[in-house]
Length: 280
Image (cartoon, rainbow, N blue to C red; front, side, top):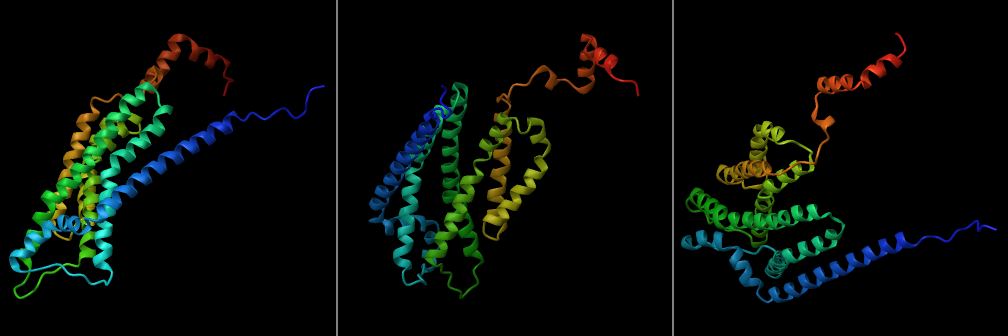
């Protein structure tokens, strides 16, 4: 007699649990590394903050200015935040490696060959955007603001607000420098064509200046220093996308409606369908 309750196949459930265990182990490694780096950087929190504040201090010191603390715990919390941010940035390549190692087994060989260089390039572009903000944008913007300070006015900045400002601008530039990666991904995935991306170029320029106005101080210099790199990187993404092959299309996908209709009539398919169609 056949068993009405066949044994349950646990292979799918075991595979899912094994993925969860692997994900947990990789997350533990990431958290452990960030925690160890944070402990090490915490002892140098003051020095790290001085490094972060150097672009502003270089402008304030000749005028006798200085930064201030308006929160009682600010002198402790701000260097701690800097140490945590430094730990995350230093461990970012390892974090992305763990993410890649988790996803890579499920990719095809050609997808791995495409995704790995793109992942490396995205990390390099992110750090390049941060470096551009620190070494070019901050000195220029702070020097411009110092020249606009009225006579008899002491220009001082709160260390917590300054850190929030620096993190916002640095992250904005880091993400803005990812524009070429986004363009290449869109073309590779077949979501948009290279021709369509070229046609929306004017809208991208307007959007770049809008982004610059939102994520930079209210001055035209910093807005241009974010908008112009976005536009240039968009063009670089279009150039790189010329060498990217979109998903393969069939011959029918590449034909127009008239060409497809002619091909069907030539093969006799459209004629047979017409004969079978009932009279109107």
